[in-house]
Amino acid sequence: MWAACWESFLAEKTPVPEGGWCYAHEPIVKVRNSVNRLIGQGLFFTFLDSAWRTPMPSMNNRIEGGCERAVASDAG
Image (cartoon, rainbow, N blue to C red; front, top):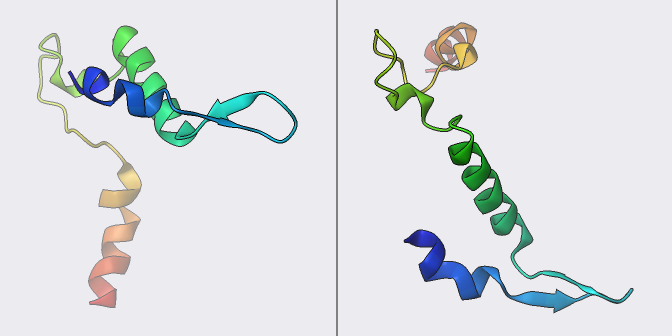
């Protein structure tokens, strides 16, 4: 769906001075490829997997909920 809509945009190429080409929107192409690979491996959105018996948070970054919380509350 998303890939089909943006396929021609992501396929745009730019010539490079040394010869050859590179993707005009290379950072977006890399993200798309990473997301597709992770979904294919079953490693993306694992918190939605019904095999887990207990609810999983969508974010498990301890820094966000740990020591940084105290710093943020002190800062105001």
